[in-house]
Image (cartoon, rainbow, N blue to C red; front, side, top):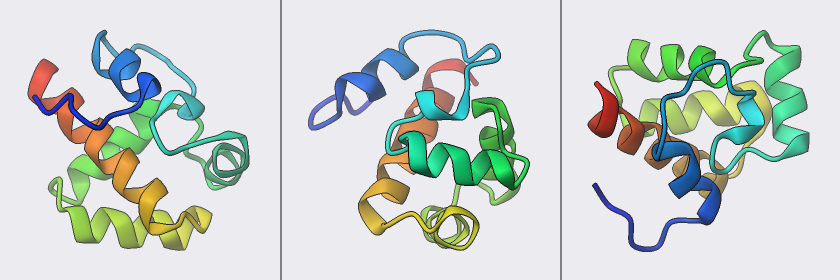
Length: 92
């Protein structure tokens, strides 16, 4: 698992099972993006994980999806992808 250059939020998320964490627990997702995701039906981290898996963990597809759904910038989308990818490596 890649833990260098990750935020504390990223490390906290990847360190434990997802459960029903709110979407704002994902790295790269703050209050503004979290509200936009929630408005589009992605209120929990596991719902975003579902989309991540539907997109077959593809970084480009996921980044484009994040930009379309919640207007995430490239860094936010990449941080979220990396967070979910690392979580999957740890728990799936």
